[in-house]
Image 1 (spheres, rainbow, N blue to C red):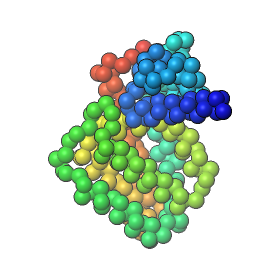
Image 2 (cartoon, rainbow, N blue to C red):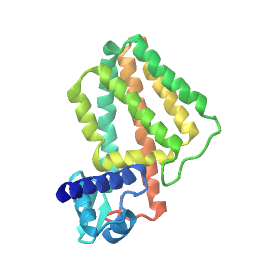
Image 3 (tube, one colour):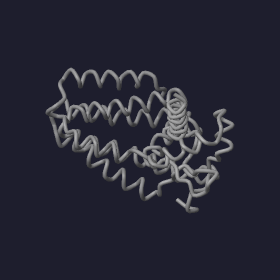
Image 4 (cartoon, rainbow, N blue to C red):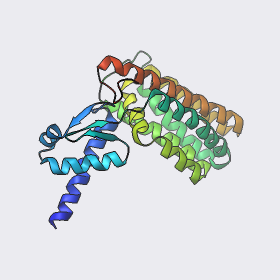
Length: 243
């Protein structure tokens, strides 16, 4: 029973640290000392060490030193290349979704887009903070739900798996953390691109849907790369000393 409790505790701590990495509370390149984490979670260093080992296996941290870990910091090239590939793959999902998405599904997604449009003020700023606000977390969920709906309509499980793998681990953590830099105008720009994707799908225009999705993913990639470059200003060192 004690072993099971210990395993459960390790899993809970690993999940909480992972959540902090994905939310931007722990930034790429940041050092996570075991002593500080043990104090933060109110446990000994043993479950912390085990939790960090699990996260290391997931590619979210590395442990170059015995008593601390470092949040994995992919290079700018890694992030840029991931978005190059993602843009083409998601373009394919949008093209396939033209045949797989019903008019009812299009209407449902358009309602989601319109609800967000009414929430956003043209002059709204915000963004740029370290951790995600409630609105930014909701936006991240909306973005994930929108792309998942298009992928589901595409009906290609292998394609979906490749995209998910591409955006997992350290690159995925950077993408999620970069939402802290999303303000109202940027969200509105993305909403218009989502609307263009839906227009093409509704009009049963596969090449138009592909082009609109590629434009959306490339725009998100540009935002993520710009946010990541600005990490230097936060004074967070990378593992190898540079981006």
